[in-house]
Length: 293
Ligand code: GUN
Image (cartoon, rainbow, N blue to C red):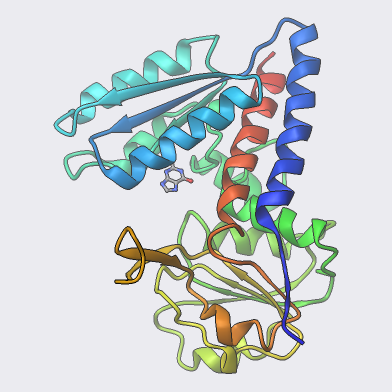
């Protein structure tokens, strides 16, 4: 029997409705959560993400501002932009869209954002809080979204073998920290695989929960998956497709067709993890407003 689909779009709508109710409660205290996104340069994919973040922010009843800086902006200009947002009481969440142009030191920018406004969860203070299981920090939106997908799909995480493919600071590492905690929706035995892992398939075949965030199209095939496993595909890759109007289509890091014959539950691409990232960004922003008030 083919795997059940985990409908990320539907679960994301549920979370966005919860956030909208929270925003309504804050409005009664005259608090309007504000998210400012800073976009440097004109990378088309980033521009699409930033537009959809802005639209979702407004739909949740929050204030959305996008600051666009030219691709030639200096490190000093971006730092002073962040400083101004840190000091602005109407701004509760700050998101500097990545990747940044070459002349800018990304680490220095991430460190400059006030941790209390760091709704991306990238600042070292928030990274540390996530690792030690302190709940008042911000968890990066994509791994937090993956955990919500598991919980809201009724996946048993306690004691599960959870194998993560990919060790990025945005997904793999924070995902590891989340799943290993002694907490609800976690408590798993976690393995992190990466480019130097000797026998990837030997690890992935042991997984009850397989989370793939490697950034390589269809690198995990059905024969690398244990029958009955839950598969979460974080990848989103454009591949050429002459039959598509745009000339390309989106695929994940998992080969969906072969994987769905083996897994018990699987996320599609698109419509799986993607919509969750925005939903969790909105939730982080509402929480930032509540905590800063
Ligand atoms: N670029 C791609 N994903 C993200 C994200 O989650 N946050 C930021 N700031 N930039 C990104």
